Amino acid sequence: MSIKKFQKELKAGEAFFISNSSNIHYFANFTGTNGQIFVTAKKAFLLTDFRYVRVAQKVLPKVISLIETKKSLAEELNKLIKKEKIQAVYFESTDLSHHRFEALKKNLNAKFLPKVMLPEKFRVIKTPEELKLLTKAQRIAEKVFIEVRKNLKPGKTEEQIAWEIEMLGHEFGADTISFPAIVGFGANSGSPHHQNSNKKLKKGDMVLIDMGMKYQGYCSDMTRMIFTKKPTDLEAKIYNIVLDAQLEAIKHLKAGVKGSTGDAWSRDLIKKAGYGDTFGHSLGHGIGLDVHELPYLSTGFDQPIPEGTVVTVEPGIYLENSFGVRIEDMVLVKRNNVVNLTNIPKRLKDCIFPLS
Image (cartoon, rainbow, N blue to C red; front, top):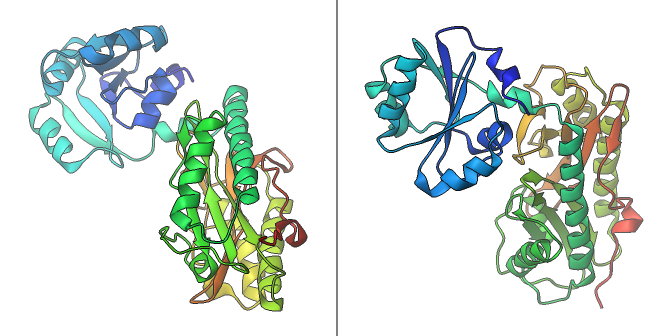
């Protein structure tokens, strides 16, 4: 993504200080642990230390100049502020730590002002190359999931399976995991973001696996249920309600739909089934360089979802001290529909894998 579009948001005398690592990756193709972008209406600079100079020289787009920081960050920024005649510097208020904010505010020779999510909005619509990377990340995740499912055995712990997911991801070509996998056996599946434990898998346990892989910086995210015996009537009922709720949203979702409307399609169906109080999280979120990013399918997100966005659709029902069901796919939002990027089958009969 060229930073030139971002520069159109700035007026003469204004600059933006980008500190978020994903935004730096997006605009500068730089992934070092120490780097910041300083953008004005006409120029852009990456500031980093001597450890990353050679790397930055290879990856930076021509429109971004490299500055090797030899003094404090504030001193280096003040040089640019003076040279470019900057009166106001905006910063990412959702990223910058309070300590760093106070240090820069105290020492910069310009107003230091917060902005919320401005760089992120340029990441919402995915380019064809980004879509290839997101799809590749998902294909690796699916390959991992199938292998993990095949290797399920009584006695394995949630933590062991989570570690297996990470190891297989590397083996199959992922950079790393998108996030620590969530593995819940039995009643543990009833906690939406369960913390993996040493609980051992038993024959008959229901298994929830929420996992994703990262490929060349781009994330995937998928949740599937595995039944290690024929589901009970209640388990089958809950599973099919969640599946119907997901399919309802996927059926109607398209460009221009508000995030809150998308959320309501699933939420209303779950409420009508009598389980509204058990669906406590949002329906979905954007995904790209971060596993959670703009836009959102949630009750409080009243902005339209643009064409070219990739979002998750993940309704759930969680019965405390009993079990929970969540089904999650990644979909590409098109003008009149969506394209599902997730290939793992999800009909109830496709999720039954009795343990030997």
